[in-house]
Length: 99
Image 1 (cartoon, rainbow, N blue to C red):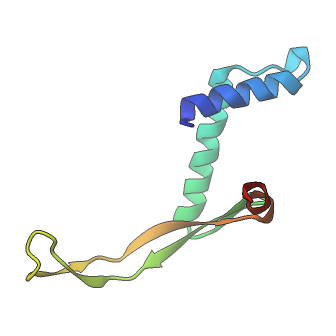
Image 2 (image 1 turned 90 degrees about the vertical axis):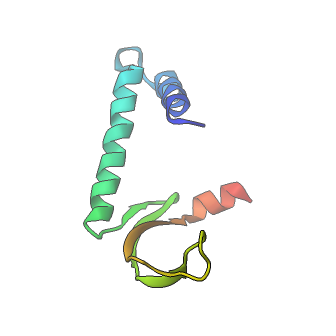
């Protein structure tokens, strides 16, 4: 499922359960998803974690610099720089749903 299909499905689900005067457009739902992603990214950049109860926890950690081998020239050694990466740990509800 890509982002457009996610927005469409979420819009339908929200509008099916909402009262007639509380319906949302695809644009509003898309904006909400974009804002959610921006908040998660900002929290991870700040070194904090984002926990969604039952779904999982997004965290960031620093991967240290290390040595490697140039794939084009296996005799040449290269240094792979340190980098911050995201990690996702699944929640209990998600684990149970996937079993």
